[in-house]
Length: 420
Image (tube, one colour):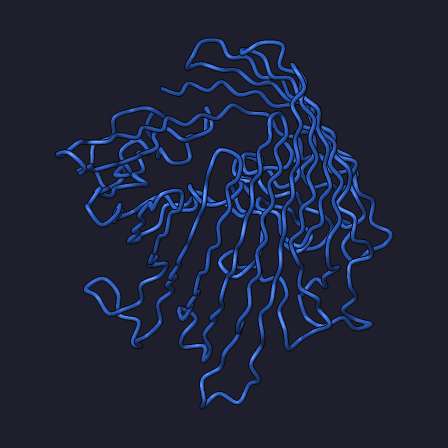
């Protein structure tokens, strides 16, 4: 990438290799009972030795030497859970990937959470319940916060219907965030998420809606501050038509932003748990809101502070994109994409109400982006992708300075993937 600051006259180009080894195993204990684990290893940039101390970047480090007793290589276990196919439903308990079987790609983040999940198929229907422990602040041997009732939890219920052409479902979640104590308030909200997918021959239509409603700051009785409401929306619509070796598609997506003028209400929270957003798994393009770009290169920074940056996960945005692809055979997939995006709300730099000394951003346009990618399946398990992207940077990234100069940027990328 030639310049991720998005400002003229800055030299912030970067080029590097990175890799990740991901291993997932399933141990069949007995019929219907499994133990599933997953870990990532050597998830790093080639030549980056920050985590190795003074030793070689792939040396086997001893743990008895305090000066070099770092993590053994960089193996990170992310999942460990049991799956039990019981007579009354399917149970998953432990650190489990969630959001992997629900709805469309919109709003999905395959995060690993400590949870208990139950679901049962009933004909073409499926119903399920889930409890997620987000934050634990009870007194333990390792932590004594000095107060109680300060956890973050989520309770979820779902129902889904699926046949050969139609898939639809409805999800309700109760979000209870009390880990802000002892600040004197809690955050609580209901999240409602219906979705619909229709397949008819070469045509596919999918859509998803999210509505979040509750209290962003619900103050305790002895705190004189006024409560702050929370209401956010998002939607996603994608249509695709396959004609022979070609395919065509278009997407419209929206995530509400917070209006800085309404100080008693939040319409687009920065905490993903309390925002209707695109999720980490939805990558609309190679530059804007791309998870790989955000993880390995970092945010796209504009003029000002964090509020002028774009990371991963679409938030405070209205997006339109169209794409066309060509698959001459089962090995090749060549695709071109155009995207236009603008902010739903123009924020202020400090997030507070606008004033002469605290103006809103001068513009709401993120910009236009064009991507071209080509993927080739070398073997059944090995594939290679190359891509190029160009962003005509919008004036949103000027922040509050109309005289700031933004820079158009490009990105070149390639990826070798081995899946077995």
